[in-house]
Image 1: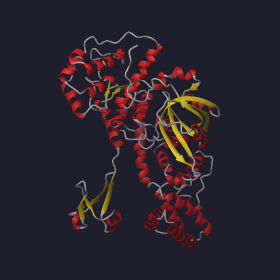
Image 2 (image 1 turned 180 degrees about the vertical axis):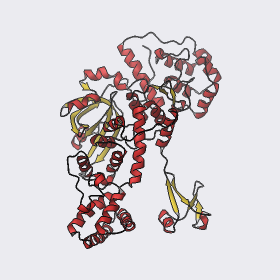
Image 3 (image 1 turned 60 degrees about the horizontal axis):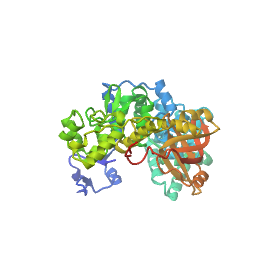
Image 4 (image 1 turned 90 degrees about the vertical axis):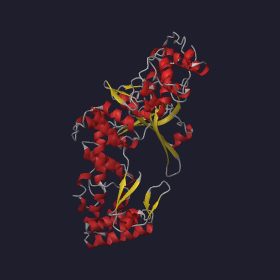
Length: 542
């Protein structure tokens, strides 16, 4: 949020005093309220990475496709919570709401975005809206006068326009006056005396139109709660439109959206979780390659080739040098024509970006790669390449080791695993420990299950009693599930989830309108060596 831009004619300093901020930007000496008071227009500009991601996806497709409202596949993805990487609707709380609501298009999506705001989400309002949307509870408004204006929102106030319509219907005031009252409620949230005064003004006006004092009080209670955090409907609808486009592209053109999102992501999850989510949608993710990758992610034969800019520890200068002097015949050619510091060569080699440049091959990973790096550290570069070859190693344990080391190094140097998901590599071990996959959790409602997964997101909060509980999003190769550590479980297990994992988690599966949760009673680390998350691994000789 870079701040507000003030529009004036012909010169801003003819209206207000200005000064230079420490960074050299010209700013007004009036605050935003004073600027509004003298009639100047202030525009708030917010950066939105999703716009760049959607634009890039459209470029990949040769133009933005039609995205019809109500598309069945998009609605199904929303109801299933398959929205990781999608604007505004990827958080655990948002995906839980989407799974509980009958989403039929953009209008329902706008309501879902509004219902998770702190105002509507407080108390029982969110749960009540979900019950009403599913036809389990009558959509009665807080007063009969509000039936028409709240018919679209099942008798509940979600948007600023609903607040204004309710005040106008109860008092007979003009919309200008009702908007002033709405703004006053927002300003007075932390001032009980001011709020009480506003309530008296509202109640007196409502009673004057024939409403009883108790009816006015009941409506005011909803007004005060919802007004503080409500979206205006245009805001919610524009966000819903962008979210709809994101899910539509994720459903129908996942590779195009993956390219845009991986280039511009700034959302809720670590990049590894976003990449894994697109992989589950069938997108093939290719690692950076020193001869083929662009600076940013590109489409390559229907797959997404991760760009060189994703490589950590490789400077922009070195990336430009590589692109300008490639192609390279072999590793010796690279070392001769693009001399790079050892630290950057290490990132290129261990990330797999040099696989295919002799003597490095994917099948030799990681043994030949580490042997080469050891030599480069100790010998002149020309001699370091002599006789480098991967030892002949076979067996299930060696294959598992290779896969986990590659994953760990991809995480270290790229921030995401591309070759495989760590839990797929560890699936046999997880099955032997009695674990189900996230895809199987839905068939175990009411049962105790064990699940092995990595942590995609975690959040701790204090209850009203001051006790700590924790929400953990667990991920495996099949999907994601939300796990809840109650205050009692959190205290008993002594804050067990403090790293990406993987963890073995046990608990009872509960379901609410299609949304699944695991109520956790046990947590322990899973697969200790080699850990797929952590520092880069140097492969010992076998």
